[in-house]
Amino acid sequence: MAKPLLCTLDEIEGTDLNLVGGKAFRLAILRQHAINVPPGLVLTTAFFESQLQHCQLIPLWAGSPDVAVTTESLDWLASTLKIRPLAPSLLRELQAKLTAVFGPDTDKFAVRSSAIDEDQRDHTFAGIHLTELGVPRSALAIAITRCWASALSQPAIKLELPEAKHSEAVRQQANIVYINSAGEVYLNDEPMEVALLGEALSQRMEETDDRSVIMKADSRVSHGAVVEVLDIIKSIGVRKLVISTKVEQ
Image 1 (spheres, helix red, strand yellow):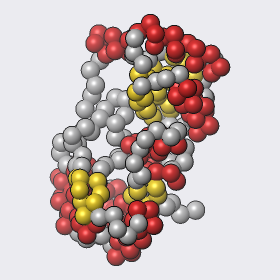
Image 2: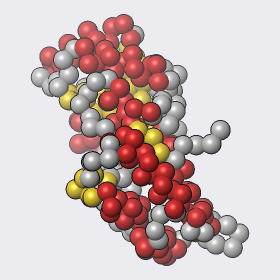
Image 3: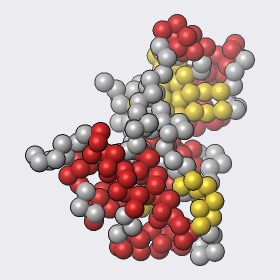
Image 4: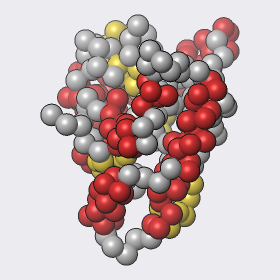
């Protein structure tokens, strides 16, 4: 079955992380739980790859026997993406979906990145990938290609989070709920029955005077398991919720 080129946040499913990227995936989960997130339209990895195919740039992106993926080639690819117009078929798909989702009169949009590895537990791209606000509909294609190019730029590298004593102290103080790939739930490294999570988390928030929660779920965990835990977290008066997905090594 062909991968969709475009999807709304409401159309994203639990197995779509590698299709829509980390940011869009987590925003979709928040919307599904009635948290106030504006509607959004996602250009999927299939859309990006179709543009590369149209521009005959796949060897530079994926490598081939004749073309190595080097820093220099990615720099050139970033520069080239910014000046190549969207494929006509992709532009038509985008315009039709924009009208279907936002109506014909909406003319200002925000264009943001949602890379697969973005905003993960051990690295981030904050302030590196391009964000453009107030983009008119007529200039969306330009903003999109500029955003793609920023993801291939030299500064877009892993930014390792601090380890050692400071990060250990943060882990001990924060309210962290984790679901592993088997669907097992942990509260700050302690195994936890789902039925007891709400009471235990409420008690911990009282002890730490912190009503924020970090929820981490392996990207392979079932969507139903994530929904069940999110419903519990929402029911106990959490003021701030941060969701992260990762793959167990």
